[in-house]
Length: 437
Image 1 (tube, helix red, strand yellow):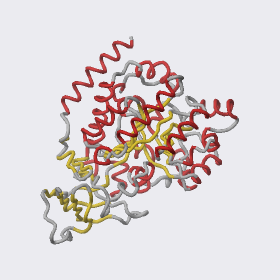
Image 2 (cartoon, rainbow, N blue to C red):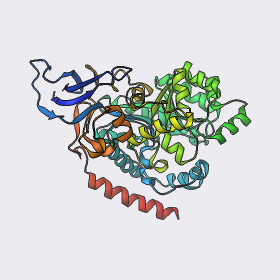
Image 3 (cartoon, one colour):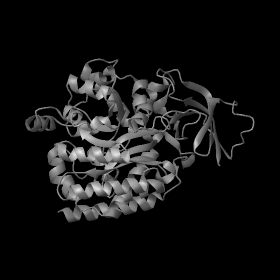
């Protein structure tokens, strides 16, 4: 097994709930896919002989970031449908274009997303889309970690087909790519899936022993429609049909009342805040401060590139922190360290991977990023966490290790041909838009 020693950087383990878990001039030793030592420089076991040593002087060494909700192949639609309300955006622009996507389009669009995420320090993501076999193949090739869900919309007879495809996908890919791929079921939302259909999804999730990834309480219109049709809120409707008896990733959760928040906390639902997508589509500001105070588990996601328009988790952290401050009229809301936990520790918990990733800790998977602190926008060096959340850019990431494998070194992604991906995705995007007119 290959051995790597990262030495001399500021190691941010994220192991504590406060800001104390930082090792100045630290080191991280990696053997195979796992971290085998974390401590001050020079404290690795005497018998540890690395195959590769990385000089991390001037760098922050962090757990890889977790993008807990996106639609990876939607990178092909980046810049195509902007400045529109959500339902108009979906029905008039996105869904018609998605109907023209081929399996190969999905594969290349996912590679483009993976390339963008790696180059900005995201090592794990949760994806909901279709033609998911191609998504999994792209994840396997580029070397990332991912939780993948076959998107389900109730439109008979395709809804039955979707359940069958989801089961086949789970059978093939759950635990694949050296266990870097996990599978969940992906019913789109309460307004595209009836309670009866969702009960079938829940039953299948229980049978397969997997979780569910769903959009929930995203817009005011969704709240009105569910209230009209079922006399309750989307969150409480999901609770009534016992969806929260299985692990759930609930994306957005923008429009919540106090009872909704209490349910999400009590049922340990993994809420994913997508601040920039929610801002762009004018969906609203999720009450993250209230959720965290109530004990909810909250992670961060970018959503797809058609509604963001990038996959940069550093921007997402920055926006999340600032939005909570202005929304609550409280400058202490969502401080820097807590924001960083949303993108690391909490993201791992949301995906059900908290025993494997999210920390720099002995025995954990070696998903590690090195952030260059020797940049003008990161000087002077006062508060590391303030710099990481409020000033750092995705382009500051220099090196990425996933599952113990060196995936990016000195900004060069080693697992794929970047020029080929850019060429293929541009060619396919032009074809899609041309055919849409």
